[in-house]
Length: 221
Image 1 (cartoon, one colour):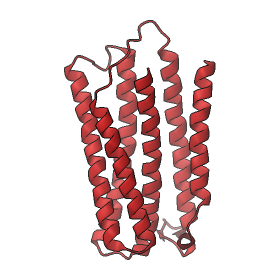
Image 2 (cartoon, rainbow, N blue to C red):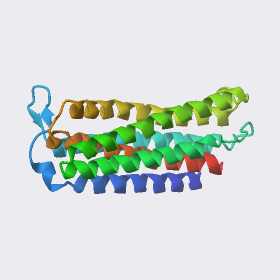
Image 3 (cartoon, helix red, strand yellow):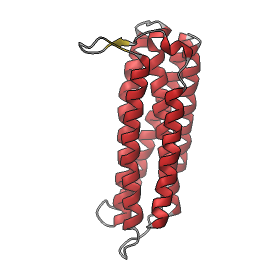
């Protein structure tokens, strides 16, 4: 139990530190004005949008931490049979890293108002992300075909649940990504989509960090 608490503290400390850095590291152009009208309350400022994302990521961090804690506690029981992770997960990890890299490239291009580069990098990032989701589905199908069913073993259940929750967060991010691409398709000015690109980038970096933690956890146990 002590080891579990230490690991959770390290995970949460790393995530919180990263979130704080992202929150206070506001770019100069981020203070220029609102990104859009938000309900009847008037314009939503960029700092408010970033704070909203950070609050969501804090909740998501707590959720993943709870599942990791439950994972460590459950694996001490005698009916726990370790799962052999599919090799495709390594490929999926590379895909998610590449996706995060191209989101960062899109963010850098948005800062310089290079609309065409923003569009290209966003599309490539989305392609890698969709391929990552397809790879996860392939991994699940391979495990199912090999007889590793959801309810046949606690280790199997945790694998499916952890990877599914992460995938759902990715899919939610793709919805925001699609809205940003739609703005670009409609010839929106770069300054109008900078915030969306920046928040997408922060979100993808976060999900990459979460995946690396989950993948390391699954491999080590």
